[in-house]
Image 1 (cartoon, rainbow, N blue to C red):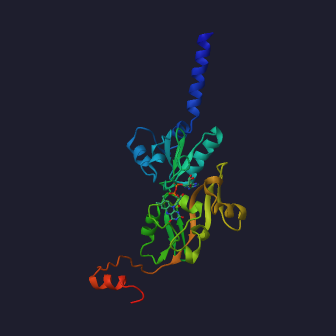
Image 2 (cartoon, helix red, strand yellow; image 1 turned 60 degrees about the vertical axis):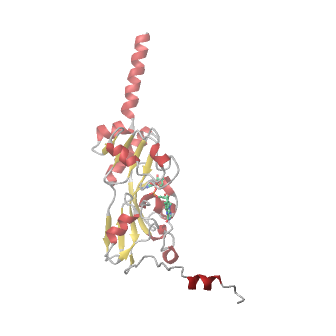
Image 3 (tube, protein in one colour; image 1 turned 180 degrees about the vertical axis):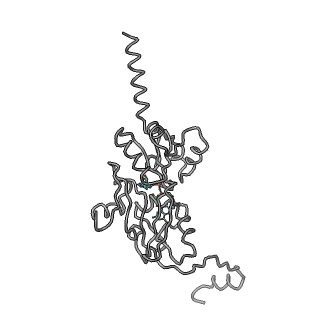
Length: 251
Ligand SMILES: Cc1cc2nc3c(=O)[nH]c(=O)nc-3n(C[C@H](O)[C@H](O)[C@H](O)COP(=O)(O)OP(=O)(O)OC[C@H]3O[C@@H](n4cnc5c(N)ncnc54)[C@H](O)[C@@H]3O)c2cc1C
């Protein structure tokens, strides 16, 4: 009797292990997957702005390269209901937003296209980019996009949070310049969300964070941009200048 119970528990453990997202993705798809300990796993975990997020230990890191691969992962998650996290640039400082302990982490790093269309004046960007990569790709094109003030911030979380930019005084929140979201929804279907086809979802995504699905690309309005100069002007504090700036207003 004892033996059969032990066998049943062991069988249950095997079934549970087989149902983990990491195991199923490994068995049923060709999606890249990092596990601990692996150099790629450690390297990916080091790419958080907050080291406390990077100290968490996901059960595996999934590295999809296409929207279809993201949908395949979500389909498995929808069936087994395992807690997971989605990471773009990893700049959110809170544990468990783009980081996770014990469940699968979906890194969007390989969804990193930047495709400019000068005819429609739009640029399609993947959430795996950081803003300095978008800037580098657009450099010399005569166009720019409304993006982060620090280049290391990720495209994915920044655009879903609204996004304040050096260009916001002219064009508003970065989310205001999003024309379309390619989105994998919770039931694993893929939709292209625009103002005209899903107006409520389109509005909700402009600041709604990760609550409505996984965005696999954003179509942004591109804006004409000429040369930009930068640098520092440094003035010596000469006696003459120091004296004059210290002179009382009444003298
Ligand atoms: C040093 C620093 C500078 C900053 N500068 C600015 C600034 O100039 N302007 C500004 O507005 N904000 C700024 N921020 C805030 C920043 O925009 C947010 O922290 C933003 O969430 C970071 O985006 P990320 O992609 O790097 O984040 P992540 O930490 O990767 O993700 C943040 C959230 O978005 C979710 N998410 C990421 N990608 C996707 C996706 N593809 N689909 C669904 N959910 C997703 C994650 O699950 C998580 O909940 C700054 C933050 C730091 C630390």
